[in-house]
Length: 591
Image (cartoon, rainbow, N blue to C red; front, side, top):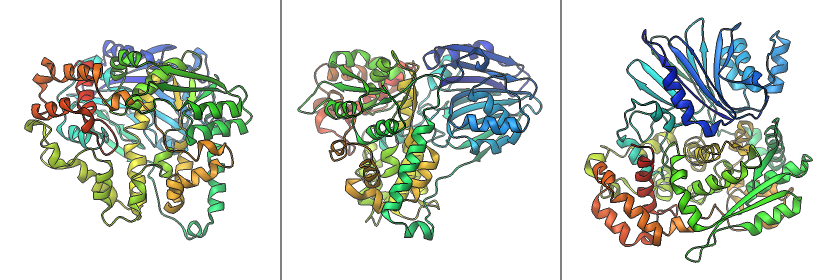
């Protein structure tokens, strides 16, 4: 897990080592163990390294293979790299390192773009081919690893984080009106390629992009989700599906133990993270490090779920770390949390992951996390109504969207309103694509391949990497997801959601953590904004910078200030927190 960056020129100018160094320096927390810059003429790559596999300098990046004429800057982890290495050695390739980076490079030399579908893991990388001058960018199937870029004139810059691009300067930081509508409508989800800034874009997941020397490029999507079911699938019993899902989970968790350093688990006490601990125990893991976090209660809402994480930790005898964060400490760390976001994200989980990662990184470099289970196995409350929906697009928007397009017009200043309802049109177009006929499947597909990418997955990457911590997500193993997509919706919707996963979990972990209300990282102080938090957000939204930016109507802001607790979104988020978070993020990034 690392940070990558670079500059490519499509004219006679040279790539700037200075700008690349600025981008790399901005990502120092992502890779505290090493740094490197390689510049050759019009192409330059930068890298910040977190040592996880092959701890020697032989695996330092950017990695150059002069014999093959290839240079790579890679962020992520390839879990099946030992198997691929053996296959490539059988074809005559000789390796200078023992890590996964060189395996990607040799695989690219051997198979070209056809190498990418062979990769099991999370990854974003750039490869420069000296002979052709082409630059190829690749992002993993679920966008677990980020890749941002900015095009200015004849120059292309890329980085693992948006703030790194800003550090190099010369970026159009005006607000993208369509992205703003997504942010305000779809609970801060802004689908690729847009970001909230007009001058910054992001690579879509499951994409290989190839740039020619003149700046023209082509995109190739190498993986697509498929929810179609064969006659054999339709005939399967629930017991057979359970067996198949459990085995796929075992393989996924086992894959994510590959490392030359210890691997721990972020343990919330929910079924997802508890199942990971249970499966690792089955694999014979001893003295497994587990970590949980809790906050102060507020307005009668509990701020931790320690009783469940304690139960799992005791049951499996883990080396458990329980972290409690006082409200004042949370408030003190909010600016740093917001600064760590590559894009503004409204989930209260961010502060939880940020502070949890801070503590975890003191003792370990790699953890497994339960993100993705709700999207893959239908754990959210909006999936059951979809099963009987006559208008899936409208019903999905009613359950998920924070506000309608008409209401948005009462909240944003007129100059920031898009001409049409782009967010709803995006959902409608996605639902209309082939490969998912059932309404539940349509919702699962958009959540797994769009919402998940630009909310939970991005959140985990940003907050863990702010402390040089690598997070692996076994529920997003693509083979597991392909299997889960074929599971009949009714098996996933059973037992109040995630039915098949709960049935599988009963074979592994104590039932007490399965048969309980669904939980989240509870951070009640940010949901019910009052006292010092209300003063903080009022100060931000009435500041000179906010007034000059003029995103929100003043009458709307005054309504929120007067009664924050009365304006809660369908996903139980605070409207006031949503608007203030955006302004705080813009100010933290110096926009």
